[in-house]
Length: 378
Image (cartoon, rainbow, N blue to C red; front, side):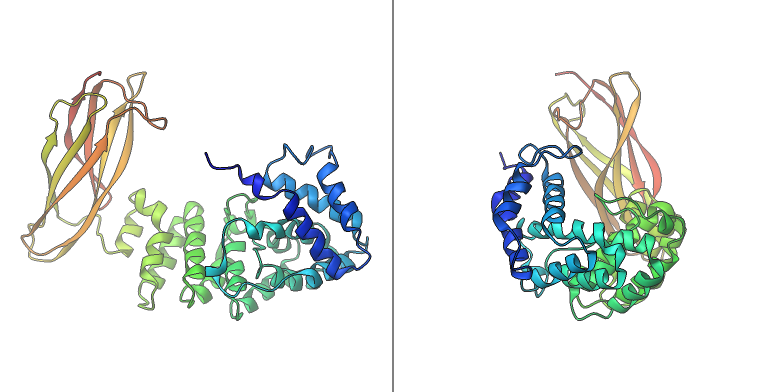
């Protein structure tokens, strides 16, 4: 069993933070700080040893505030002075080493609003060692008049880490972070920034752009589709990542998203069930489904085919699950066979029950019934 993530942030990490601060503040009490960070029981966060990764980092942040100067500007300058060398590119990111900087990210967020310009300067440097996608968000919300122009300038920054901070930090639904409600309501300012980054030389940045578009799609699907259509028409290394940005809409069969990537929902394609083996499956079997999609027209057509099984639940209701199938371009009169294997064994994430299961194809987002099969108990 893998060690818990929190184990990667233990005494050695705290001692590295102490070393960085000692470089910046010669009178910094390294040993007192380490003992404080590891030994204090915080009323909100508890003790260091049982705490999780982020709470451990928070405990270190609070210990830093007790051992560094009280003036926010002095704290920000100490953070900037104590940073080690920047990471040149995304390939240098490895393991959990970067999390040693997480307490400093939290610290900038806590004290930086007293001097926003300096705090942004520090985040520009800090994100080149770890990431400031969590701390930048409060500056977007509380000081947009200063932060948004800085983000726009950073879209042309020499460091891919800083450019990625623009796309990742503005994600409306960034995991592990509070949502940016303003951008959920109106993503226009975000899209203006993403337009500058979608053809970035770094795939690390472009993938972040795609994840941001996927966030936007959850609140504004039509806006996301319109943005993707603009980007799709540009051949400069964007199409694969645009598809990634539309993934939630594609999975849901959104007609606009499917049209952008070349699969017309109303395309006159035919699909039929070819084989189901075993024909009378039992719980524990592996089911193999074969379907054939055909193009009866005189025009080449794109086909995106997924399979959907309606699994019987314990109460007898049906719960559909989609299984990724395949995609193909069918020439006039051509057909294409697709095979999909589905485990009917009991899983922690899916419990099987006997009964009649429905079988459907999702063809360019269109649901096509293919029949049903009876699943027997073991």
